[in-house]
Length: 297
Image 1 (cartoon, rainbow, N blue to C red):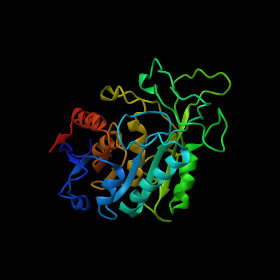
Image 2: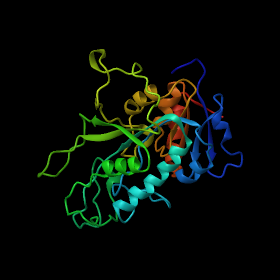
Image 3: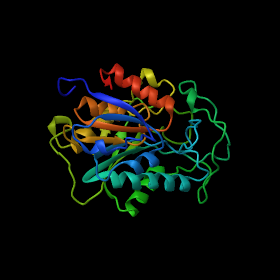
Image 4: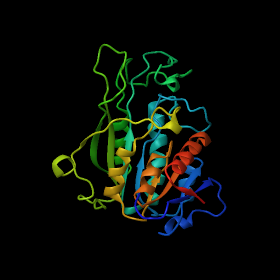
């Protein structure tokens, strides 16, 4: 953990009367914020964030059982639109030289099935409802959700700078027998401006070469997040944070989930703001930070 003092964070709520101006201060406090990402972002000051590292909910893969959740929109096009609007808010609070590191998994059309059975290794995979096959696609089609979002953000003014392949050697087996088992996800690097902070020496690849665009990294379990099958691993967040920010800079995750970005940012000496709609996941993130040696204000 960078520095000698334990990182300190506060748990806040969307309707915090104190506001978020303290996020502009380099000596300000880190925070987990319970609330809707769009609403919280709308209350944050302009250009207070140096880097954003996040993994939003995937489309049609999980019912979180909470009002306002993303991912169960009737159409994938509505899902992309909703996410793009959230990232409009992200772009406003991001510094001119800031970057967005965006991880998003893909999915297939349902093939007409309106439900999904539980998986022995992933009980949370079960869904009582699934959106229909999107217009223009066929049953069994790979949808291309990550690229649809990347292009939507590009259309809204973001610079799409790199697509990084997260190769997962320990990927979960699949029962399908007419295509390869999926063992990768995408991590997109997007910037607000043509020129931006990118410390090319902060992270190197094998044999001390420049970092390549394929990152091999095992998925990891998290004791606190046993019901959260899409846990974002620290090994994916840490390189992004090292490259895109410096000590005391503010790192944002508008979809904090189990708190991986916040944990990694604090351990690297950065401040963090993690926004999470689901109070159960916010408590998972809080417990994880406390277990990691953080202090709660």
